[in-house]
Length: 128
Image (cartoon, rainbow, N blue to C red):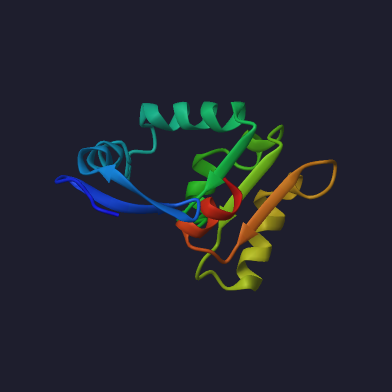
């Protein structure tokens, strides 16, 4: 496949498509790294978006306890039907404890929880 100037290849859903480089820049500008600003207005918006979603993807997150608490997990996902998350590079024993503590609703009662030792792209290719 030939790419136009300003495009980069992006593999998704098992096929490669051209994506405008400025689109990638747009997405990158909308990634927030909050560091010490735990009262940032986008935190509340993120909690609302999570609690109103029917399906969420947790990609490249790391599952640090302070971030899970910041996003009000597991309370904010109590009614979500599907949660998908990567746990690439996390020791299974540690991740099983995280899953039991923060994602107990994702087992049983018709809910779906899929956590895989995948990278982000593979998770999206498999489950999106």
